[in-house]
Length: 210
Image (cartoon, rainbow, N blue to C red; front, side):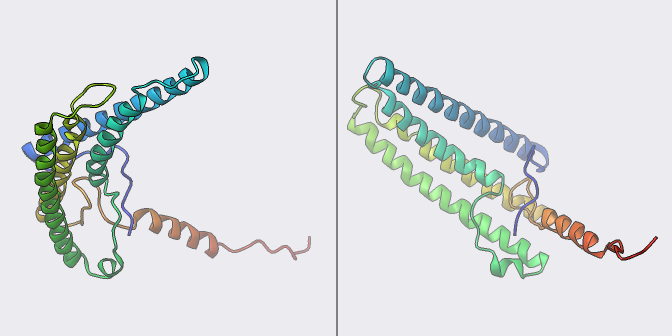
């Protein structure tokens, strides 16, 4: 089952929850945009340096390493917000809407809890790197700085899934994959209706004579 269009996604949660959700959305979009842009610039600069100076930029690999971690764990929250995570929905699709809503609430609550559990474990990993005092060989930045994005991304994703559960609890007309994206076949149904109309149109009789 596919979701409806996610262009211009804005939270439909009421009150302060909606404001928090929209702030998180802006932060995720900013981090992803800056991360991808910086990675592209860094990679291009490294290629130019290799051709013009005959050697790569020594810090390029470490910068990309930092950006990959940042983009990855900011991206999981972004994907959750847009309902883009992979789902196995063969049985789910065959159920009536009230049952699907209950299942979505359970799925969102459990997934959010798993994200927070992973966040807790990742904080321990960051703390162990902090205590070790290890640094990046070229940049000299501490290793824990790279992985600080892991608990942040997991926490934001957990929050997003719990907000999705709240949205489904307070909604009675739709099932929500996220706080703004509904679950449905809207686009597919429109295409099927258009195809049916085209097939039902009578074809002109080419054998008619003047």
